[in-house]
Each structure stands twice: as C-alpha cells, then as structure tokens.
Length: 297
Image (tube, rainbow, N blue to C red; front, side, top):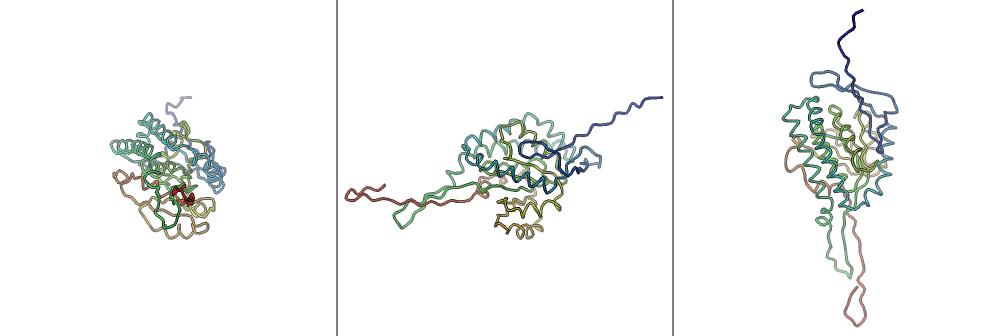
C-alpha cells in the first residue's frame, strides 16, 4: 500500500483569555477562522454567556489592585507589552496577512500598535496632572476634582485587527480600568495572539479578558450586565448605538462611541481617550481659621 506524501496541517485552536488563563469555552463550540481566500486557518472558540460572566467576574476581582497600582508601574507594564509585541512582530505581520492585509499594511499596523502602547505608557503618570483641578469656590473650602477609573469596561473591538484593538484597550487599562474585550467577529486571531503576549508580560490576571464569539449572541447580555460600568463601541456604523444605550440603562453605564475608518490617523491617540473612561471625584475640605492669627489650615 502506497503511503500518502501529503501532510495535513495542524491548525491552532485559539482559546479564550479569562482571569490570566486560557480556558476552552464551556459550551464546547468552535468556528473555523478563514483566510482572505476562504481557506480554514484556525479554530476559534465561540464564547457563551457563562464565559462572559466569568470574564466580568475576573475583571471585577482585578479592579481593586490594578486601579490602586502606582501610575508609573502601569506605564512600565504597558511598555513591557510593547517590547513583547516588538519581539513577535514578524508573527503578528504574518497573522495579519492571513486575515487579508498586504505585507506593507500588516507592517504598518503592527508598528503603529507598538507605538500606541508606548504612547499610552507615557501618559499613565501624567493624565492626572492634566485633568485634575483645584476649583475656585466662594466658601471657606478647598475644592479638588480628581480622576478615578470608571471600573469594568467592555470593549467591542473594531475591524482593525491589531491597531484598532490596542487603540481601545491601551487607554482603558492606562487609566486603571479593567477590560472585557469582545474580539471582532471577522478578524479575531490577533486578539488572542495579543492575549498570549499579555500572559507573558506583567499584566495581572483579570485586568484584560478577551472573548471570541458571536456579537448577536453575546452583545445584548454583556451590555445589560450590571457589573459592567461602561461600554466602548468602536465601529463607525452607528445603527447599533440606540439598542446599546437602551440596554445599558439598567445600571446607567456609559456607552462611548469611538467611530473611525482609519486607525492610522495621528489624532486617534489622545489622552482624552483615557479621560473618557474616568469618573471625576470632587472633594471639599474646610479651611480652619485660627482665631487672632490670620492663618488658615
């Protein structure tokens, strides 16, 4: 009997990323990821409601320590992510090419994603100084406004497979929030590859959780979840916004729309992206007058 000389490819199964681990979906469902020519190149988990719930629980559990971490340390961690993406640049470029980008476009996308991470790493210990204020008041008080993280943020990743994902994720975690990312349905591979980078970096488990699956199935439930504090929708099509805002009213979560065609634009990266995902806390402190001294404390 003549042996076949044709070798079957061993396709990678891209798992979910929840709480610093790579679990398979509890539902056992998978879908084929296809290249630009319609050929199967990988298997993707189809996340379920339970997977979403576990991701949100992990994000909530990590919020306290991450939001209280020193700002310069968050910057160091983001810079470390950039270093690791740089070390795996060729792998990301090849993966982006599989998803339909040309070699030059994939290279630009990867380089821009690295630059984006470094940009927000630099802002981690500076945005408070820019956006916090001492407010003038008529009474004998000091009045301070400072930024605080919004909490658990759901990020609906744009079609830009790597740069768009990093452009919504970096300002979120730079500001002390934790994230549950719903990867783009059509181009999900880079999201889980980025999760592998995060796993090798200093990012604590639960700070970033990445799910792959069906928007139609997961989006209504995840937006209504009462332990999610904000939702970022990054597609240009605004048709879904009214539905998202209606479903988000259960706990008055904020729904942000960051619509862009070209994530390569310079104005995409801005400290105001960090501010969008902050709450402003105002504190009043009385000024105590010392009788006869003219001094106040």
